[in-house]
Image 1: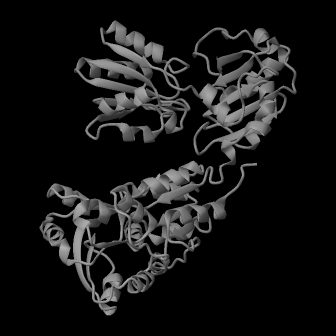
Image 2: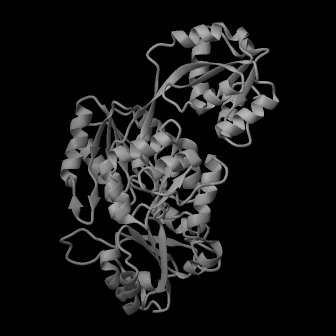
Image 3: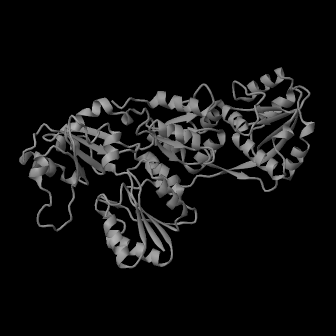
Length: 506
């Protein structure tokens, strides 16, 4: 039906255009490249067909002619096809070749430009491509010309003697040749050069040298593809303008084991600090088969003195049922509401309920002590929570003289897909920390990842826990928590990770 040639941007998934996002959300087929961030696939329909055609260092999953035919075939099947290409489709992306094939086959197509890595990578590295004091023009050049050409299309004399900033794509294998050609044709050997590796991503690194030394320095520090080569005096601005590479967790691989529904806030905070997040949910949140007990409890709310929520999910599923039976927040009139933890409190405030009590510490003893001061003794308490949960809080409340009714509103089930992928990343040294937010995440993690995997990679992998109960569960597997914030919250965990791993990228 139609093929969209989408620019995926340079690597940072937030640099995707709004138009490309809208097309991904509706496409029947998604065909994506090696340099297109996998996170972009989260925008796609779950029932979409996904085809990976990445090309890495000459290793082609699918040759270009077969990619062209694939796009034609899918379009002729009446599908809406999103062809997701790294950077911009028409900037060394072979998008024009694919467009020509589609035209020849009579297929409709549209190009959606993307942010090219040639601009974004240097910008994240603190290198503007133009500046009134250094360069008034910029040239984008391929460092890997079409095989079989008898002579180079580059006018090396013009490139070397001009005042443009030069940006070479796909040139790392030919870096010594590129540097030598520029010097031989008149460019000063001390001209600054920057190599920007995996620009705009959590893996970004930048090397600054000069034309005379850059090839040797690249080999010394292990710089290879995908890297941009930026040549010109604008590179001198990097010490003043670089910011991205000062993110304290840049390049640190951190495993997030929270349920996918709960992980968004932690992922966002870690990514803002530059971390390479490996989302590996070890639990999944599912609704109950029947909400009849909860419905009865809601209709009888007037008999309760306290309503205590221990999690955001408890709030979510309680409110979902409340609305389904045609009621709203007004039914809580006259009932005191407690929230265990700031995120739970925020979930209540989002629904127009100001909690009467949020304990300073999120353990049962602190909760009960605070509720006793507010008169929980002799009170009737409703506790909507997970089906399987620790009994400490209700037991302590009952000891304090409260009458407690527990209503399951959701279940936590084991998860752990792609365990092999996480184990492989650990063995490659790509993982620096595993985070645990509850005892169930610990138990479920070690049900799919053997403790030996952690042991053989220590001390390179740190283990971080929220709360002493989680740390105690971890100890049962033979490990102590390397990182355990004093406050049992997500922001405190992130602060502790920054304190442990943080650097300024200097």
